[in-house]
Length: 246
Image (tube, one colour):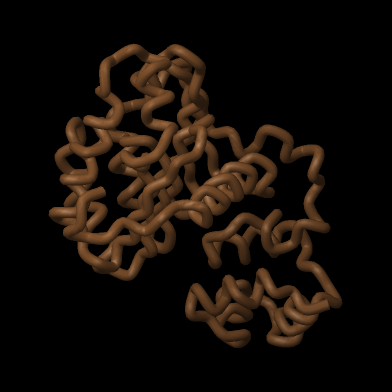
C-alpha cells in the first residue's frame, strides 16, 4: 500500500526520491520501497528522515511507532489560566506557521488589543501563502446572547465581537477567510500548522481565567480531536461579507 503521507510530505518539502535518498544517506531503492509501503526504515533512519522532512515519524510510519509510548506526548504544556500562557507564546507560535492558521473563538480580542504584532504578522503570513481562517461569534446568533447572560456583562460579548471584527475586516487581505458561527463554544482553538493552543471554557468564568493547553501534533490523538471540532464549526458558519454589516 502506497505511503501517501510520505509522498505528500516529500512534495511539500520539494524533494524527489533521489534528493531524499542523498540527504538520508540511503539508496534510491530504499526510498522507493518506503513509498510503496513494502518496507519501513530502521529507527535511526526514520528519525533522520523525519528531521529532514520536518514531520513526526509517527505520522509518516504510524505502524512502526509504539503508540503506548505516545500517550500524552502531544501535550507540551498546560496552564491553569489563559493569562498564564507566556505573553510571547502567541505571536512566536504564529511566526513559526507557514501553511495553516486557524482561529475559533467568540472574539479573541486580547490578541488584537494586547499584541501589537498580531495583525501585521497575520497579514504577512496570508500574503506569503498561508491559509488563514478566522471563526468568530455571529452577532446575529443566539450564542453570544447566551454567553452574555452567563457572564452578566450587559452586551459586552457582542461588543467585543464587533470590536475584533473591525480590526480584521479593515486590515485583513481578501485571502483571509472570515466566517461567523453560532455554536456553543466549549473551547477556543488557535491552530498554527502543527502547534495548537486550546483555551478550555468553564461555565460562569471568563476565558482569560480558564485552563489552556499547548499541543504539538505527534500521533494526532489530541490534536486531531480539536481540529475536527474546528472543521465542523467552519462548515456550519456563514461567510462574512466584507463591507456589509455583520
